[in-house]
Image (cartoon, rainbow, N blue to C red):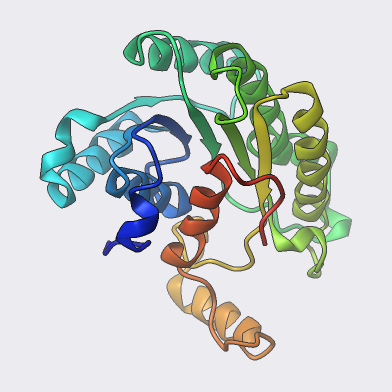
Length: 256
């Protein structure tokens, strides 16, 4: 990834330690790349230890001088029985590595989108769809509040989506949780103050989150692109800068 911001802006950002949950792929990986370019130390996390290892290797290859600033830990967010303890363990490991304090936490984790016709909606599907997209970021907030520096220079940024305001057919479960993330960010901004809390709400972004055959994905993208002003779906590089903005001490508000 080439530098996202001009040198004048980069120099204004101090070297900090940033925990990126969901940082092994997609938007989270792009945020990790951008943070390394800023000179920050980065800890990435995802459900798969092998994916973490592969992502760290890829980041080290892209940024060989930053090897000492890259690490990662596996954290499964999809199992309700271990969700709480896994997040507690993740923060304990991250804080130990950080010698007691983190500067920023970013939540970009996601699982397969629960695109379900209403007639096939079940309580089990509703509850499982919220595990990674609602339950986990809220528990992460609880732990982040313990370990982030109690300052308005620290931040917690979560990820929602434009489907919260622009619904699609059969996306009602996804849309409900996306909408609740906006409310979560507003509430956490009060509960975690003076730590800043923001929500980034991307539209369609081409990432590995789209777990479907490539032809089906491209057909969906082409359909959406006909309704977009710029005529294409977003790329990770387009979105990563929004997270950088939210981590800057001057920012306070949700990004679209």
